[in-house]
Length: 315
Image (cartoon, rainbow, N blue to C red):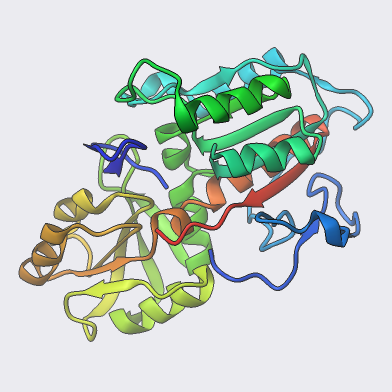
């Protein structure tokens, strides 16, 4: 379940902890040394391309870096890979804004905020790939205020904007759920739903829920909210990144712990009365890794320069 940008509660998923330094690298080039940014470039965003490489087996680049990738070629490949037509989503998935024809530099991030757009432009990127895009079905049909400023910045820079919401949550290798599980030592053994939006897996060793909460805090850089019995021994964990709290009812009786990004008032009662421990670790924090993994995959596949930019969000 996710709250759309206008505050309405909707069914689905969506989306920072401290990092030691701001550096940029090209993940598609094995052995390429980090490149430290000049002091003047350190503003309100952090370039995190070298933070915790995504544990994905990437194919070798098929194009040398000096040959740009055509926008339509990249759009077609992403649609084939993520299969947005398989999902009933409440946003536009795919190429949301068409910009320059040739792409050499790709910036990824969680949300197409103005700060992320400006970071991509400053980096000289021709394409921006996000989990939360610019257009949502519940949005009013006008472009004023902050919506206008975002789109104006995109159009002025001729920046291509790609966005994948539920398709990126559910992808079995590059998706948010799988990538989060890999960072927490959770081997994904399947899903609790047909769409693959609620992952389930076993811990390598049983542990109390409070111990798992400490592991989550260390991995994500923030303390999760814990509701339910902290001493409950967890062997099987269900998880859904972002605002997936409504899925806790599917996990009752099928896992000892349910991990998600957000919690609602009623979710706490379900945890207490349903015999399951809830961990809410942050919408943004749980959804940083899918789009980063996808960017690294595209960098290797098409020979792009890829930079992941994290615009911190405490929610």
